[in-house]
Image (cartoon, rainbow, N blue to C red):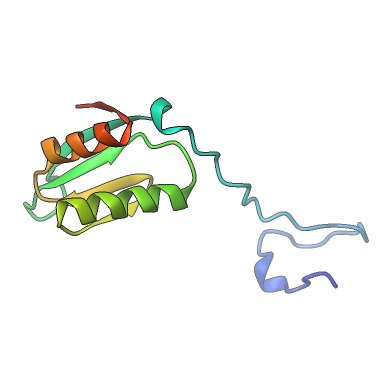
Length: 112
């Protein structure tokens, strides 16, 4: 049976097609590139963070679950907190050289 919950379809008002299948626009996740083809950028940032310094890792191309796994690995190896959101990995503190060493040993290309 089709899911006919109208609350999940806020942008469709009416369809006369009896075979209409609602598409919510959520496509499949991007395929993760192999580790050797990933080029990641490491930057130090303290804007809009209350004066606290964080290390940003950007440029990851792939599934959100793989990005979460990479972020967790970096947080554990550095022994600090952080988060993964908006396609970026935020690591607390100025850990640029340590993260660069960890990513290069894991096989990633690193800039910054």
